Length: 381
Image (cartoon, rainbow, N blue to C red):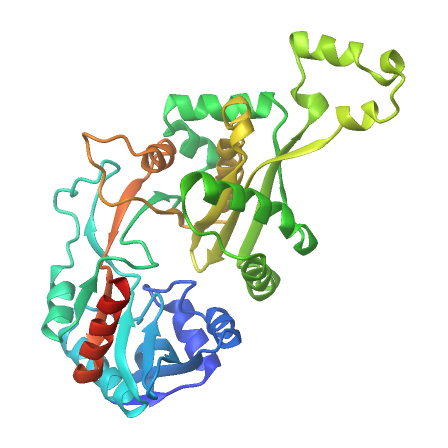
């Protein structure tokens, strides 16, 4: 077994066929990191010239010439294979140390325990506790706060038609979709110059739900990197003013028509397009990932556009023969005594909870690692 640097194309080919692939372990994410001051490395373990394990690493200096190394969504290997894991991780550790790294962070896209839609363990389902033990034996420590969620929610699409998938939705979810369609909600793909529409919705949502939104440039960069490769989509669900008017509202609109009011701008108002909900999806390998989204709070209950947007993309994923529709993060395992709106929304479409192995760090330069921890505590205060 050898450990060596490999080319971007070698890595791309291996990553695309790995069962542990993730859009985070791609040269496109590497290029995005490079634009933000990170250095990129492609590394692999080979046996008789064939890659058996690989990782894209990114590194950024902190101070005193020491760097943080990260394997976002990686590395790509079978963590239950103890011999391979020991060889690759120990080789990574030596490599990071030789490049002035003091810590290594990993976030393998590696499922730990098979769970059902309620978050309960599936009887006789897979359980990769050996992978967990292998990492811990090598000195990796789990991080509680990480950018990659440990728990996600996903829908198995394999061999199912959109109609079969919808039959497994909760009845109220089907009702919300029908209502959205009745209210004239339509979904379309956003062009790059329209990303301001997307950003406006996600920014408002971030203020309402108290999370940090990405800057517009981030979305533009992700568009440039992934959309031309057909590995990302930005969608908006919208309606027009006249399509939502009905009953008394319709009669009121007629009374306020250009003829009745003498106002020429009234016609434009009646056909104004309203963006209601927007989302960004990653399409990598055999999986669609629902990554970022937002909805205009003023219209959520009246139009249910967020449901129509999901239904549109689920149909798209099924028709394009993707194997899994990943709704992405949920707030931990479901608590039967607490109502979690994010989990309940995603659960309404069927599917199951996914539990991943988590995010870990490995101290490379122990003295510097302890110094950084001490300085971090001082800063918190």
